[in-house]
Amino acid sequence: MSRSAEVVVLAADAHEVMAPLTRDNDGTRPWNNIFVPIESEWPGTFGRGWAAEFTHRHHWAELLDYLQALPWPRPESLQVLIHDEEDDCFGLWMLYDGKLIEVPLPHTERHTKPRPGPGSDSPEMSYLHRTDLTSSEG
Image (cartoon, rainbow, N blue to C red; front, side):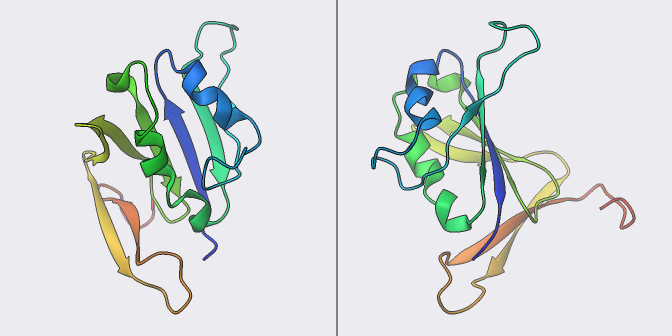
């Protein structure tokens, strides 16, 4: 299934943890995409963010499990933002008890769609819907 997603990882003091994800896959992760550091206009002042674009759902389906298993130096600061092509806005995941859990955002609802058909790489698909938009805004 071809579904693109933008992923942003924010985490304090995580340069060493994220460094391997900014290079070509060495065979240790289930995808080949590379995260790019988010740079500030003032070099050296931000350094807490990385972004990647995934063009197929199967490329990022295991991303959350992979990220939650990494040795984050400050796990309480980890935030993963994911915007799937059908989402109205980015969803937010944070670590709670060692698991990346989606944090409910005000005025949003996650809707689940049934599996699209044979050969799909996902048992179900979901999208994040804004509940405060009128039909002309969404």
